[in-house]
Length: 153
Image 1 (spheres, rainbow, N blue to C red):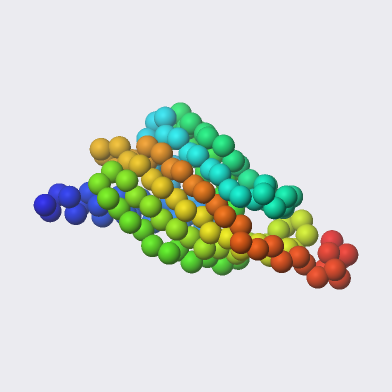
Image 2: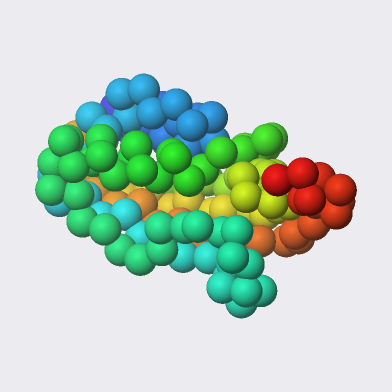
């Protein structure tokens, strides 16, 4: 039973490192946690509200190795600048994990404030490297910048 908990703590630490990197915009060494061929799938409801500010990387990306994972994570973090975030927990069950994060970000183009939630689902290899991450983001609200601030841009 002790090995089970050791594995869970290792996966928990990987999820925590990835979540911290995504939310703070600091990649650190998280690319090393991706197994060769790892898949990153990203979806959101942003298109439903026709929000041009949401320059997202939707779709499914297969990461061939650590170099490609570093490039992908770097590009993802350029598009993920948050004013504030609250991680709502991490659940690990065997070779799978889930996490939820509520966030607020500011549109760099017009100053609008955007709030939302993103769910993350992870699957792991037997050596606790990430096999796949699936994310689903939900935008809750877009608060337009005041007109005087937009005119100054």
